[in-house]
Length: 422
Image (cartoon, rainbow, N blue to C red):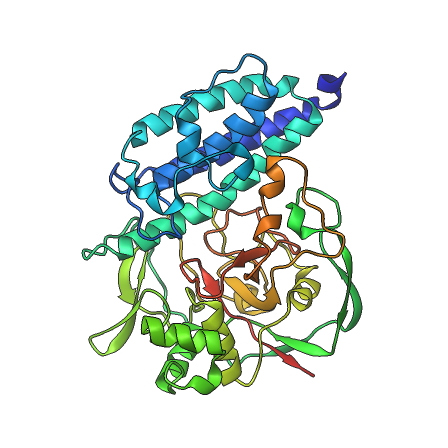
């Protein structure tokens, strides 16, 4: 009865699983074994680890726990590829992932093939609740696909040769957008959070009411050219724009510009997946921390939006629109090519910092078991970002999606949309 009831769902899920898994391999295809092994900082993970960890997720929570007779591919590997699940026991230290030279990249690919074959064979017999775990695993892997791309970028930026992973696409010069326009947001009581239709992570609910004061949101995100003006006006040299923690971060780390920016030959350049190039003044600024975003907003006489303001404004926009990742290939925020980018588009290009702390919604409860550790235990000391980026797989984001990072972190494609009170 279960198999008959979910036959259509099983077919669709099998296709989705295969598509997601193939994209991960395609993203890693240009890399050598060394490229895929090295770890550039504790916040980043090697490509090989991402490929293996996402496989461990399916092997552990689906095959091991729900498929009778399944034998682990290698009983030693869960120690290597568990990320943060305390319920799964001891694990290799996060900041030492780059020391795992064995298994090789090809052995990890073989691990993926082993698990894929077992899972696809078992999928038609799995009850709906376990198929939901497979769906969660697909969304989990899409998160790691974005991390895989940004971690490669950070790694290659540490290489003095500054190698390009993908060739740069031919670019047509784009004029700077006009001054920011302001869109009046909803005010009064609104509802935010996932509606219950389709997939969502646990932290996106429960849906609840929020009170919004009169406000307006910028009709686009801040550009590289506008950020260069902030720098030229002493933005990184004047404490008055910065939160105390942010100013301490600037001084301690000698921060003078967004991550990957350098002054060369009298102008600003940036390092990207296509190598080092002059910044495009019309493109959205990216790789800025919450501290930088908040300081820029203060300098501009504005503020960052709250996540409730952002979601209320984005709720009726297409989450699959904008510049997002469709295939393995060049990944970069794009400048305006028409009103779809610098009109009130809320998805793609860059994750947008909000002024909201990552905390549970009213009534939130973590799920039972190890998967309950997925989001809830990280609801401390981090800030919410919304909207997805050029490295977010298309179809992964939605208006209720809550991304979160610590305020100093900026190796993701993070940018700035301003807000102001009315």
